[in-house]
Structure formats: C-alpha cells, structure tokens
Image (cartoon, one colour):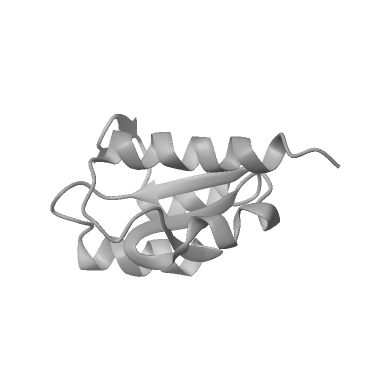
Length: 100
C-alpha cells in the first residue's frame, strides 16, 4: 500500500499513474517548471502531481517524470500545496472562461 499525502492507494505509484494517464494529462508541479500560464491553453483534463515542503523522493520523481506531459510552476517561490492548487485552478478557470 502506498501512502501519498491525502490519498491512499493499494498499488504503487507507477501503476497508479499508469491508470490515471489514460484519463488525464499528468503535469508535475515544481518551482523550476514552465510558467503555468504559458501551457494552460493546451491542457485538457489535467492532473497535477506535487510534493510537500520536502519535495518528492528521487525514486518517485523518476516515475512521475515518465508520465508527466510537462513540468509546470505557478511561482518561483516556495508555496504550500493548497496555495499552488488554488492558483492552478484560477489559471485554468481564466482560460476556460475566455470569450471567443
């Protein structure tokens, strides 16, 4: 069983991301990633993978990078996970509500 912050799975990270990748575009959120605003218009059904204040273990990061469409960032500053998700939701809402 793999314990992930806020989520418990009875499968490994590779198997979990493999299953999710058939329904979602997986993006790895990290401080040194591409500016989210530059890629939101290309996102369809995104799923964000992010670490806590300690980051992601190296072996988990290797797995995440195999499934990730891209590495994205909402800020160059260290933010709490809930702040990053709030900003990502805001940016996605901006794109989805643009007038034609």
